[in-house]
Image (cartoon, rainbow, N blue to C red; front, side, top):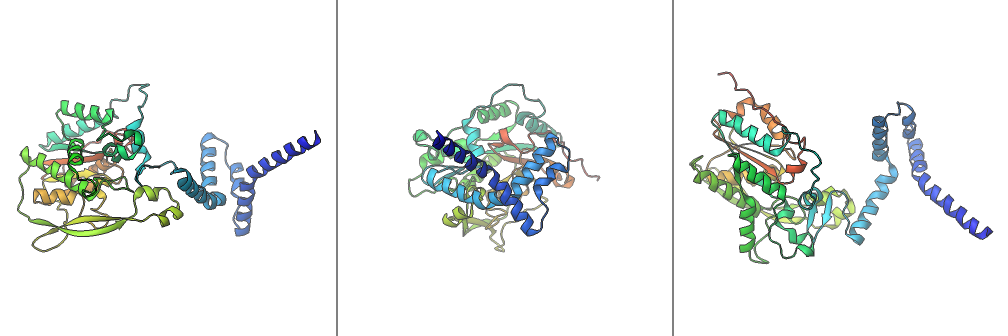
Length: 386
């Protein structure tokens, strides 16, 4: 009996020591540095729920144990269990996926309450379209498919026979926009056809293996699909500037890998070598540049930023669309903020709509549900004084 009690006592003491150790170590580190003991901050403010949550975040951000032990634990989970944390998911054949995109495709949000009519993608987009129409400006919506929608077979063996999956929310929004008279480019259909015609082992994928964004091939196909819609509908004529492509390969560590924030993993993973095609003016050989006086404005998120503002520059969607249309464009790019933030930026720049005949609005598919700041109705900027 005494032996059993001794074992129980050792177990309890060990458990309490494990719980107390991070706090003791953190206090010792702070005293050694000459810093104030952060744990005492809890007594320096009112114990409201808001203050306690803020205190908890401060303690977590400053934790010496978390900064030194968490990366090692995450590395072990990644290597031994294939677990990549809250933001990333390990797929098949070395493919990495952004978890919010996977959630968007696989989860069915419970419709417990009717969404507010002024804070839905449909209401925000149709209101934007109506305001543009009052100024004789057309709107063309381009939904950039989630990576997991185009390559579901790389997520799991159970999706092995699938080509392209379009989430019900995406299908519904595209259908409702068309019924409301808003033009939408169907990149899902274009990518489905490209996948069917791809030669295994020869044709590169439409998305990057380590990254959440489309590959140069995906960019070029999207630009050609959008340009075809614009020209065939007579919304703009091809210009007179001759652009051509210049091969500029870049080495890129994917954003999904960087989201892990584990240096050991970043050091082990070989960056992808990406064969980009930079767009240059054939006459002066200068890389593509926007023109604020263009009749076409392009709004979008990081799917427009990649290759365009990132290395090698002038090789993204905007530049390739300009090449297809043989004319420079105007663009506003807000990384991660295409649902609302990019239109707020447009509102702050009233002169940018001068002479515009067409606005192309790109946003990634998952933002239909997870858009930053939701889908607010943002008025157009007032017309500048003549």
